[in-house]
Length: 163
Image (tube, rainbow, N blue to C red; front, side, top):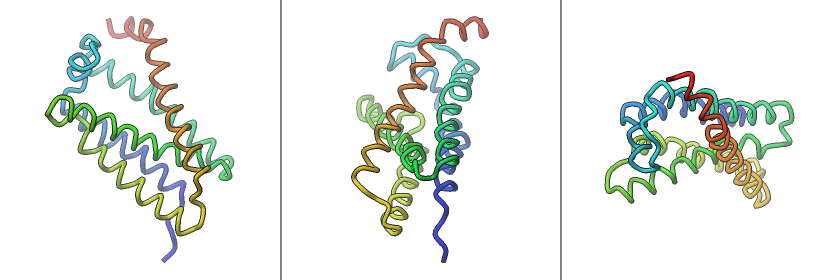
């Protein structure tokens, strides 16, 4: 059997985020969770969804595009998968802290499953190196930081749209 292409695997993380993760967070009232855990006033579903689609999603898609344009930059693609794992760690932390499942915890387990599968495929193809893991982890943190930074910097302007 032919191994799956990495572009399909990396894009699977993005699809999991959009289809399953955002849905689970919405069903769990993630805007309320943000208020209770981060002190962010209830921004409502519209604005929260807007942040996900306008700030988080494009950052991941740009990383994916960079990988597609130059597959030698494997860390841009693997960084997407590792971003999902960082998301899992965040939900796990708040689940432990609050003694209740954080909205998004269960779907974030899919990110971990994808990451394990991707790492196995990289190992089988002899592409898994310490350098790749480090660069991918830094890239994942950059995806997270850029997205959150955009939300923070542009929040006053976005708030006007939803006022």
